Length: 120
Picture 1 (cartoon, one colour):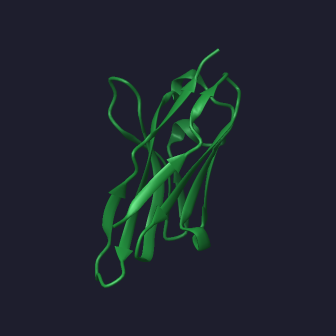
Picture 2: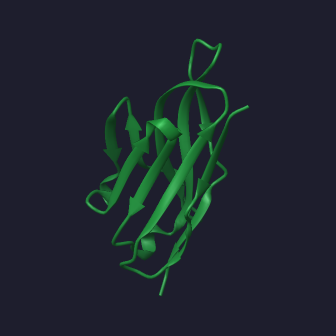
């Protein structure tokens, strides 16, 4: 069974920083991609940042402020969020394409989400 466990959310003032972590556990053979999405109240879920086969992608709204990184040995992806704005407030979800041991094709998995609130 695969789990994506997120941590690091919370309340922060505008201009502050947070670091999110997402650890994948289970009988994982390989990881094709890992990334972060977010969903604000009343809005659709959107891609924030992702690492796909070593290449990083960012939403235009977070470029220059957020940095995604990955620790392959720990099957963990991080999202360093700096210069946070109130519009960054959302539930942040970890997402990964994982191939399990004994499987031939990757499947997509989601974490449970972690709340990030940017407010003074």
